[in-house]
Image (cartoon, rainbow, N blue to C red; front, top):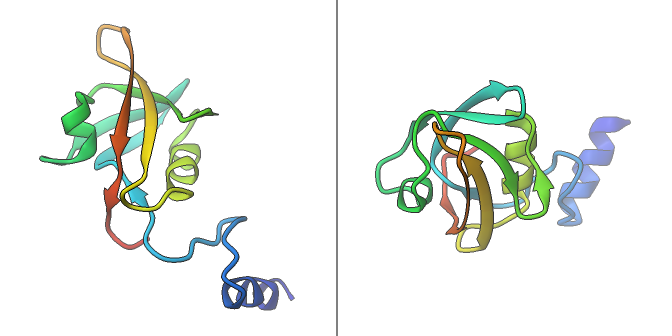
Length: 111
């Protein structure tokens, strides 16, 4: 029954509840869970994250008005946006200084 419900949701073109339709927004970081956010372990060269100044060791804490407390919440917050959308991303750098910049999302790898 759950599978049929998801199939019908996709057929109707309705995203939500873990169903993503089409390409999703991407900022170009590798992350792992850390208390208080998503810890950046890698930054793709030329990515929106790199252009904004997000570096390895940063802790992403919010996307738009959505608080980020894990890798899952970061993914869910970003994946509601399509490539080309602009969204504010907030992070703490290695010195614990807070930054917020608007990033224009790109197309990432398939999920």
